[in-house]
Image 1 (cartoon, rainbow, N blue to C red):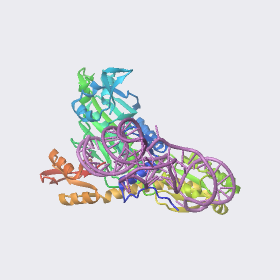
Image 2 (cartoon, protein in one colour):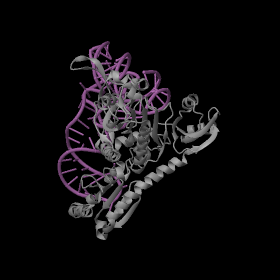
Image 3 (cartoon, helix red, strand yellow):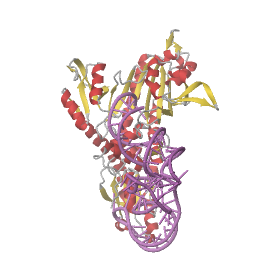
Image 4 (cartoon, rainbow, N blue to C red):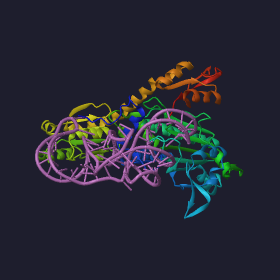
Length: 477
RNA sequence: CGGGACAUAGCGCAGCUCGGUUAGCGCGCCUGCCUUGGGAGCAGGAGGUCGCAGGUUCAAAUCCUGCUGUCCCGACCA
């Protein structure tokens, strides 16, 4: 008899998400407002995200560095848009060593300012460029309302900060990185993403242009999952960072920054999980397959021995697995537990299987069970991991495609959005007023101007003024 | 930051209206036995300054005030 602790997704989506995160032991509430503890199940996912992205960054020429958590308050004030954007979210340290500080420090909400203060020291000549640094760090943003993983006061992320000699090179870098995010999200997280440029209203505080990936979650709402910014010369000017060009002229340096955060883990939950708990894409799963031996005292050794025999070469084969040989839980209990924790593949081995030289293999995403011979377990599991990974992507893409609508009918969009959310490809005149109206009246924001948008004449869905392309609009987290 | 709800054992809750023995129940946990193919059973046991701080009272989980935290709904954001 299954004990169902998770609120069904259809009954209360928010509560379902919270239940999944807490009960699968990804995270727990911390005693600090808006902060959470990332537990081993969640941190294991983060480690795999880190590992994969870090390789992708290194392959594209980036290196890691680390800058301080504390930033002199005055630094934040040097770039006008930046300070305006981040001031409301700053946590400020005013005392240390039992005394009030001469100048307060802010806990970094992002590191552009402190990094560019250092780039000033390190950049003199065109020969010093480009600088392609990344850092893995924690940041603080004092949010009014927080949610596990998708919005917390402190979160973990990576922030790339690059410096270039030319505008073209900076733009190329900005686009390269947002494409890497898309590739990572789709390939590893099984999360299909729309990719495009942010509107001026939505872009990063201090950027010339911001690019993003926008996947659709199961409630048909967008989650901004990764952003890449072309910072132009804004920070170079604010921190007076110049280089001498080949021609001997002093020029301001061109900058980019880009980041993804532990929000991705929230995205993973929102994208794939179900009423039985977490569902993890195999490529990111800390444990990809769990073996549950079904034994009594007299055959325990024999059955666990078979588990070990089956998995003998799995480490070399690159399968991350665990043999759950605990004897204080019954098999049924373990089945439920591992399902709740989202392990992609479960292998059941009991005396009946042993007698027939077979095992039972269950996949988390569809709950399907198959019997296979002991000899073909490894191959079956390997194939299954590949299949689950692509099935999850296909399922997510199907949901997204079926809920992305091209429309010119404002009333229809509003009705659809109120009833069931969704993504809308709409004509927009480009004015801030129409963008604000969409948000104020319908909670719809323009998620991005997609790169691959068909260029076509049309009329703004809000004001009817002429428009040359469609944009992607939706409610967002 | 506004509006609403909630805060009692690790978790979920009852008790509070109408103050009065030793604050209960289910799950979980510990010990033992027995079990093990979808969250078993029996017996025994441990575990609480009733979110925090004040106040009223002979007496507060219960009444009053303040604070903090969580959730939901808004406004703001990765």
